[in-house]
Amino acid sequence: YTKDRWGFYASANDRITIRLNRQAGSSLDPFVYLRAPSGRIEALDDDAGGNLNSLISNHRLAETGGRSALVTLCVGVGQGVALELLPA
Image (tube, rainbow, N blue to C red; front, side):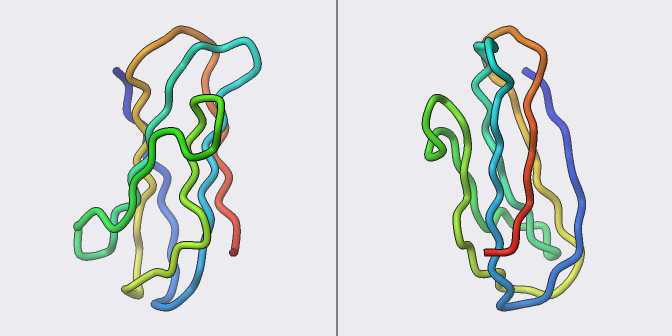
């Protein structure tokens, strides 16, 4: 089980999409949490992206400030995952 964290700044009411894709040939199963500036988890996902990939789609942010996308890899072997943060 591994954890990585990516930080970014965004404003309240912004909409974002976080896509977490495992690399081809990997059997990793990524899970993503979106942590708000207050520290609470405001969104999370395991497999909505299909093929064990994580997807938080068109999520409206409740707070302005720095936040983080927390990634955990619970099972499997492989080279890793790619995280995309996109405006929705």
